Image 1 (cartoon, rainbow, N blue to C red):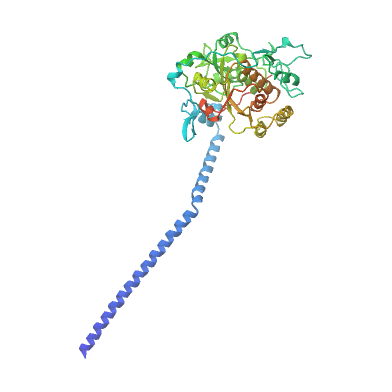
Image 2 (cartoon, rainbow, N blue to C red):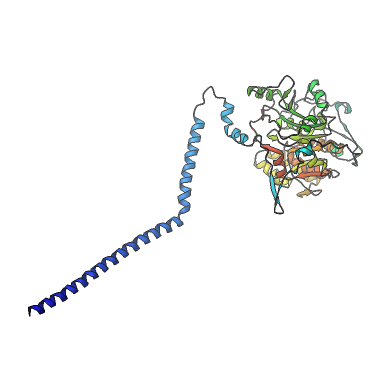
Length: 471
């Protein structure tokens, strides 16, 4: 009996062991549920990260930008010590941008038919050293000779002109430098003949833009010239780079300044040497500027290089906001001689139509709306179409770099262009398409792409605003 009880007890022990194992299994199942909970939590976190990743990135970035803007604004409003120069403080950001571009010689490239090519296919240095300027061929152009009108050619007018520019009732700025031009005379000057009589600045001895005899003598010695200008204390002078030894022997570099610019540059310790040079640039100081608008004064060396350098065969114009960084002989070979062109100028990068450009000029406050409307009304009256291409060329140009041969026809083109700028607005992009359209005989123009212009110069931007001329 007792043995039987012990047996029943042993059976009970087995059952208890089995229950114990069951408890263990239950505990293990609980652990698995906890593990599932953790996995589900991780999944939710990952899902939210994927869903809201943009906010997690942009919110801190915006906060950082707001902090930086606040700190910059605080620094700009903090007092400047007397030892600091205000011009350096005000132009710090501009100077940083300029320093990044200054003296860069790396070529600008673009992809053509899947192959990366240089925008300006200039000759290698060893060939540039032996490059000869080609002899001028007999021009096949109809225009053989230009006769520039002066005050001696016209009867005296009552009241005469003021030597400074004034706004007249017909919204023109003609003066003793330009000579008066009626609309009928304007139409006559566009007519192509073997000999063309034309207004082209320097109309009177009292018209202004005075240059010393010493500088005139130097300018008359230039066969090829690279020129720029800064009036009213405008931009700094950037030394040209990338030229060959041959170009240093054969090419003149001339910068036109007025007395305000001389004073501004001297205060920045950029003084003209006793030989008249700063680095490679010959500084020509101009006195008695003819226009109140410094932009118009700047058009004289820009467009009338053939008047300033009467014996030069070729000229390259570079805006003061740029640093010329290529060999001049190589540029002439690539843009004129190789393409059989007499004028090379950059296409406009943003627009093609003069009417679209006019809207942009008004929108950006580059000219008064009424001035632009007077110009466009005249162009519509003359029949200027809204075509985006004339003579197979893009109608609109960006004229910060102009490369040209001095021929009677190109000189005529530049005179007409200058007269349009004086008559209407100083925005020369508006008048270039009109002159190109109306002077149909000038066809061998090289309108090079924007990337070529970028290869020609380092763009520095305008450092300071030119002061208006004081009367």
